[in-house]
Structure formats: C-alpha cells, structure tokens
Length: 173
Image (cartoon, rainbow, N blue to C red):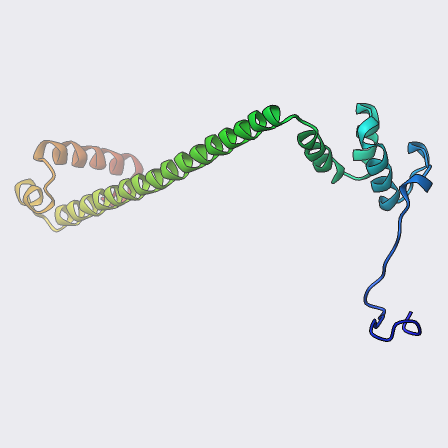
C-alpha cells in the first residue's frame, strides 16, 4: 500500500480484517471458533431461539451478557425505562443491605471488644482478690480494693476452697 500512497505507513502492529456477514453461512452445529460464534450471533440475533442461545452460551459464556444487552436494546422505550428503574431500585436495595450489614458488623465488633475488656477486667479483679486472700487479707479489705461485694467473695472463696480440697491443688481461679 505504501507504493500507492507514501503518506500511509503500514506496520505489523495493526491488522485489518474484513468480515462479510452475507458470506457467513455456517450452521450452529458447525461453529468452532469464538469468531464464528460472534458472527453467528450478529447475523442471527433477531431470529435466535432460546435453545440456540443456550448452546451458544455453553460455547462462549460471555455471550450471556451480550444476550441480556440485546434484550434491553430490543425493548421499546417505555419497557426499557421500566427495566432501568427496576435495575436502579435493585441496586439501591443491595447497597442499603450491604451498608446495614457493614454497620451491624462494626457495631458487633465494637460490642465484642467492650465485652472482652469487661471480661478481662473481671478476671484481673478476681485474680487480685485471690492474691489478696493468699496474702492473708480479710474480706472487708479485699472488697474495698476490688470493689467486689462481700457476699460474692464469701461464696467464691468457699467454692474455690471446695474445689481445691477435691482437686488437692493450690488456691487459684
């Protein structure tokens, strides 16, 4: 081509293929390549049957999206507007559900952290009470230091003492 028009430079980086749809006459059963599949869809798009579409999607799964878009394009203006409104509604609904899920997840994590801190504080307080009891302190003193009620401490230390007698271990929680 350069011989005829020196202003146009051709390279190996760009190829041009001319495909003539009227000359494409393959039947669905004889289609082998993706190119042939697309040519068949383009040529027969107005007359494709549901069964043919399924066969084509099996050969090339991306065609499923193409068929959805083709359905949209073939709708009249009012039907397409209703379809798009429904799609927007579904998108908004899914966005709201996702947002609510994320808020709930954050709240759950926050509550879990708070519960964990409380449990840790409680365990630390009980360990302190045990250490004070081991050191020979009375329940009034232990209650003032740990802020645990005396009746609870009495019951706790009785239970610990009974468990230690049956397990013959040291005084610990």
